[in-house]
Length: 115
Image 1 (cartoon, one colour):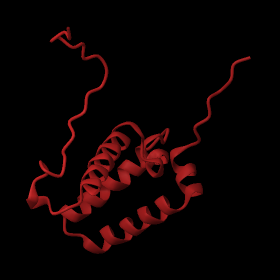
Image 2 (cartoon, rainbow, N blue to C red):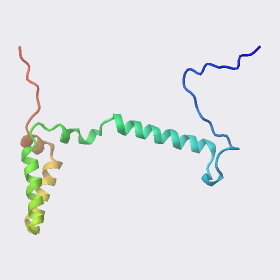
Image 3 (tube, one colour):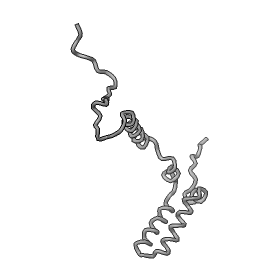
Image 4 (cartoon, rainbow, N blue to C red):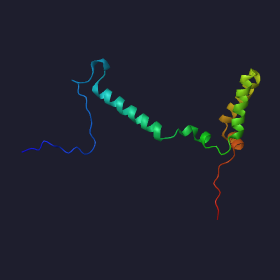
């Protein structure tokens, strides 16, 4: 005789078949599954993997001078000194485009070894 109870250990999936897939989607079943899988992958990646292009900005050792430039740009805008704001903004853009200037302003991040 077959037992009515079943042990459900592991991962379980809900699967839509063509009979159950809503007609308003208007897509193939494979396309639907690929879209869901891609969306889950992108969500996982954006949650756990840092954006590589912003690491040098977020890990700058002494960003105080750059923050001060940003605050001055904001003050110039509030005082409606648009010419000075634009000059300082383009200076900030040039700093951010040049890794050597950025490194010289924010400092070098080296862990000192104690021997």
